[in-house]
Length: 366
Image (cartoon, rainbow, N blue to C red):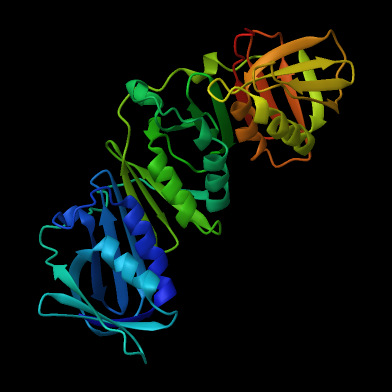
């Protein structure tokens, strides 16, 4: 096998491959990345047996072939090289790496691809397309609400389903919930699935945001194709909670305020919040909203900002991270905080309302 490729082009793809690989042992084939040159293209594959990644790049190829090399070392070598065309050649069980026009010369031991796990395309798959931009937005609006509690593994991913004429993504950790929907035009029926966040982060990192993304839901697997990339992923096997029961049908009160102003106030006040509980208090009255911490041995902080609100003064205790996370992705100048009382769920929406929202459960007041 012999080919040449620009260093930066290969570096990006090998960096992604290394993120997928979970086994950091040079003796394991799962620590390797597969390189295959055929018909003027370089195919790169990596897998941890749960998530698989494949990409194709055009290369200047002199000789076709296939091999695997220890991904971590290949990545380290590429990072050390100057930004120029790199020549690669496999011979005598080694991958020879040489930047064109330099005296730099690396020899990296290679291994046969015979034992590398086969990454199969789905059989008899039914594919459907979604705009890449919409998929990326859906992931961004939900991924921070995924639970990291392994005892509740069925909430350790993002739930994806077709619901009527919409395709929906939902994530929850039991204390907050993020929901977004998009039109399901031309999308066939498929069972609701729970997709691991590792897979969603990989899609978010690789997708260009242009054109469409093709998806196919198989038996306990999700297959994704876009641009020159292929991803396959095992799904989380479990029953996702009935999230509809958490979504309030209506809220009695609405606070209108500037998103950036509210976000900055939360960041400042949270500096003196007790870091384990991360609790702050939001007190709203006519035309005014105050964010404050409780007094502690460190001190206290408070800040007032104007808002649109008419009603009785109400104080709500909340984890400030559960507000800051959605505030980063609301994407609007103004926002709405909806609530009924201090013990029930709050809803965050952009203003004017769009196709997503975030729900936050309040904390105990003391």
